[in-house]
Image (cartoon, rainbow, N blue to C red; front, side, top):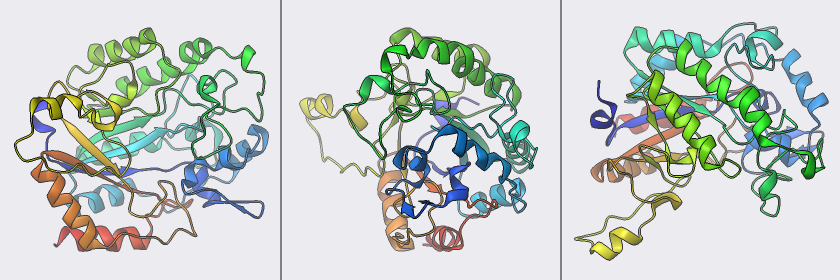
Length: 336
């Protein structure tokens, strides 16, 4: 299937899930900030301590079929799952790094493999999120060029374990982990509709090009979002929770100046709004700031009318359960 022709005005479900889900937005009497999946950075948790979470990661209620059936019940046409987030922990078996769900946890299963099989079985398209810049588990993980900027944590890079920026070399992490793992997810999990990259600050043009070219070599139809960096993309990921206004008969100047999501317009007219149901992407036990089903349905209609995809996130807990509030909101919104 030509994904560029298919990927327009669709609805998808995003899943942020990993070791951070066990902490649920709390660490040693402190709360994370609004993005609970950033808790390692928000609380400067040393890798030696954060890695201990692998011994407790045994999500006995995780059921790939259940997740996929739920997504389809809610009208989703594709699923995007965090194969590796900024903490460097992979939800797939990886030869490039043993810091993964199969090799480092008592769960001992390949989550991405099970979800890929369930998507194939039920006819749901699969996309994978992969953090290609930030990797707090690695001394040479990216983000160290942007320490003057703060996001949801102490720093973009792991400055608490590795404070000497002069010793950091992203090229090492890129060659030893990032590029090999991107190849693994391309070759081991069947057809992907897209790969979803994030926060490209450290990548140079040759890094982005190497990833882009590899994707198109192994899976020519797989779409690449604009957060890969350096202008190498098929579609634009808008800013988190960004809802563009509809312009009536826009002028050429308005179109040219509208760098949606911080990027120039997509060459294929493809856009997507990634959005949360509450404030956090990862599971956060204390975040009850839920959007109503009516709000979700209204935004969905608005975006779809503009031909923009709506990618709605859920953050399962440490046992692998999608929160009841998320389920209730998405099921109710699907009926509106």
